[in-house]
Image 1: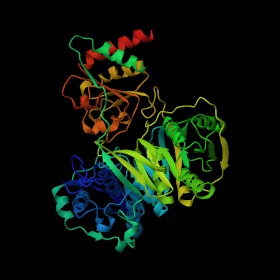
Image 2: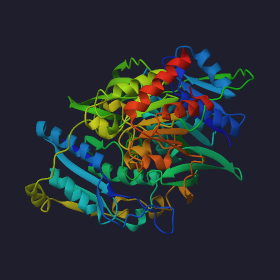
Image 3: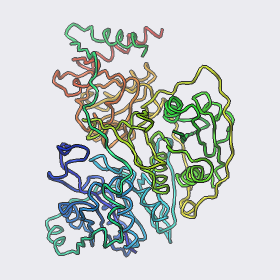
Image 4: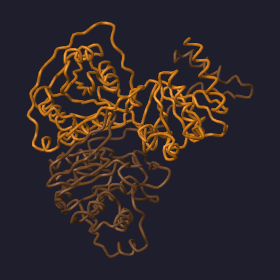
Length: 257
Length: 322
């Protein structure tokens, strides 16, 4: 079987906007989005018990190759990068179109996503990608079990614990509680250099340039400003043991007790 | 503007987040409609929606009796395409609603803005408020498409019932599930048996960090929570040490909350935690370290030892409630 894992190359450390505003500055150092490692780990564990090929897929600048090499170093077999000026600045919807096109070409039995990204983008991308591929999707998985043409998942939501299943092919987003991702060994990184890494453009995928990137996006950032300051903040030091009374009065004045 | 609000319900109750979004939507569009999928006591749920401003409540029987997003995406898409051309669909984020919003956006080719904390009209066009970059900046975001999807951070709006009882028109829908919806199935669901309010629904949260010192230190947080009718939360560091369950984690890798009151006990206020709670309406922080970053975004900064201040505060609250 074939397992595709969608990953993202995210900026390391403090996030910044580009000076012209509106979009994230992605020129600094980057890394493989931490919770995507849980999805790769889950794929590698399935590969250990089933005869599977693990393909990692991403869209991003050439620097995203670093993250793909990390994934290959962990043990993935192959990587695909969509690197094209035409896709830069894609919003959620345009990004889902690109990923769906890559996955359509790969036709995996199982597509995995990580839980979230540290740069605030596309937290629920899996549902949009699944919808475009007309595949069932399951999210927040804390366990994965492959059966005969089926994937079964346990998960926790705000209201309870679910046991859910989907007919393959399917899209599954895993929780960061599903596993502890392995470290990339030096040997793994050496091996990764020899593994196939394909780079594709939008036109390779049969996507019109105006269907992706800024032109193909349906959302727009109109402006960016500082968050509203907290007005009237107060400080109290508990030198004389009266702080509890101050807190109590503060809460009582605001009808919070 | 014609607005449609997705109402999430569990255990015969609409979620506070859904009702908050409905309250806001009703202020923008007096003809706002809401949609319910499944539910046993439909009339009671519809009335509750009416009290929060819904003029019309669409109701679809959940044919597959599934708690999964698929049937809800099918209903919303059918409603917008076939029944009435709503231009904006609003949802309060949750595991379920996030999946619905994203799937629906792809199906309708509708722009999706998420993690919104407000929505207003400017020259007749909706503009969303979205904190970005770990909430260090706030962006104004818009849509190019119609329909469009707006997904809100839970707790962005108070659910305010109107004084005048409004009997909403109830319209029933029957929607055939798509094949890929039927390809995902629920085997079982075990509901949480919460002793207190859940983090997502709580008006008050008492959160503990490393400053509580130990797993036993969380007893203090629980006592204070008991007196305030609050849910208990923990930082990633405290969860990592095994002092409190991961399901209570607030922050970048945990839940995002915005209660009316957030009491932070022994929490330094690292960015990882800050992003999950800084939109709380009132933040009270108690910490020994006068330079703790949390004091930079607290409404009441208390420089003191949680192990002395909290027991005293619990005692004061106990006297107050008699």
